[in-house]
Image 1 (cartoon, rainbow, N blue to C red):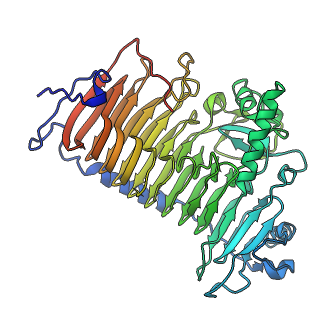
Image 2: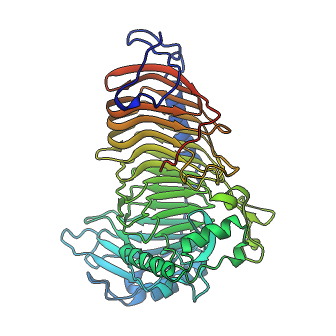
Image 3: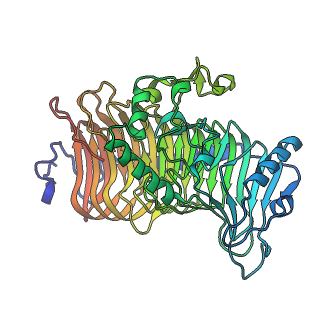
Length: 530
């Protein structure tokens, strides 16, 4: 039976053939596979978790109070960075061990004030290191920018998908393995890592305005230029530009665990893995309200487990990335840098790059911009992303958002979200938008395919499904089953340049839809959608 589902603002927006079943009639899409996809997601999540090599750290414990001879206080009057650097060197000499940030009142004290361990510069981590933090401990970083510049040379980092020399992340591990950052059980608040991000935000904004007033190119624009001009890494020096650092970054690391930490006010992205594998982020709590405070950015990394995390971010919550533009697609030349001497699956013929794959997300609470976002720096590709049993009690902009660009290429496929609930979705439940920046002429359209959404319930959304492909690169094979959107403000779906968009037992505002949708128009190009 063919029916017209045009409602309110949908008329004139969609041009597809719809095959719709009545509530009591079994759809042609239904069959033995109804539960198979959800079962498969749970199996893959369990498999990823089981195959991750968790860090193992042995050795003696260094008590930072005893080792430093300093006592933390609520005002953070003491600088613990020099003592921490000495402790790290001692751990390296021993071949591994624990650095313990103890509360002066003891971990079981019922009444306690926050003990602040202040750091005047970055916390550089080493291999075979466990950092343990008592309840009511705060690691608080100063904002003297020169202290994060490695004596003016900068450090190798990745900023918005481009690898450069720039400011050091506040907590940084570079080419290390077996690292634990974990809360100790006891009474009191979750231990905090705080980045004083508002200071960095104000500085960067003022610096960009000042640069533009005198005709200088702001750092974030120059960043894109060196990327697309294929400038070698050794020449990418951003040591005098306003590019804010991550709060925590694992660059080319293996076997990492972060567990039970409260993360707040990062200068830029909060937790960022780059060219790394075997990482677990669990039981984290966020209150990160500086602009660009993504929660967890998994970039060009694999075998990652994210579980039991409560997000509250002034940007996306979980973000899957894999490099930007030319670097993301073809790698960056690392000749003449320390990376030449490092063996990594992400280095081939002296070029650094790679996709993101095998990411498992379960039992997370979302609040912020987009719950799970892939892109927009996804030029190296992303696949095998599994999300299950998540919840958004307040709001997000989108539940699942894939965003790309004709400048960026990148293939994104095998993305799964199952058995999750959202209270209020301000934009789309699922947004598949390969025109994030408005470019309509570049030669590298992103390719999105094999996207699965099963058993998702939404109380209210502006739109249900938005799929906007290109004439020369359609979006294809999107499977949505058992989706319930109680209230749709505008349109259940908008489909352009897409093929085989399948909806089974989907409900929009009380209307059931079972349909296969296709749309192709050689003249249609999607408008910018961000």
